[in-house]
Length: 82
Image (cartoon, rainbow, N blue to C red; front, side, top):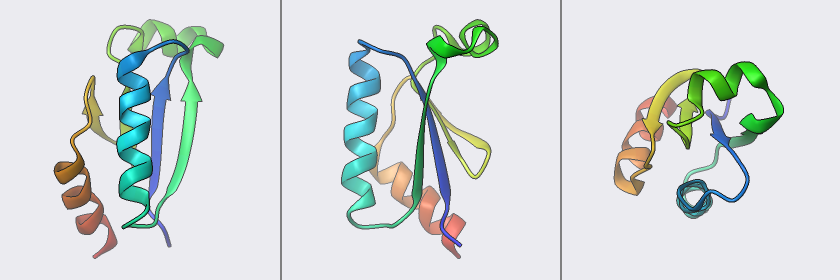
């Protein structure tokens, strides 16, 4: 079963765009399921994560806030896969 990565984003967010670029780059090497959740569609998520985005979860566990780092993402995905 593939790891599930969920990324919480909002429109017009350069950090979110950078995070999605890193995720797509890593996805070329390590296969995973990717879901993008736009928080502006959910008042609860805006309240909880509004200033902390992008927020990335791997298999439901918080992995990154604000920035995502390629090497650290790969390490976490390798751990999830084993």
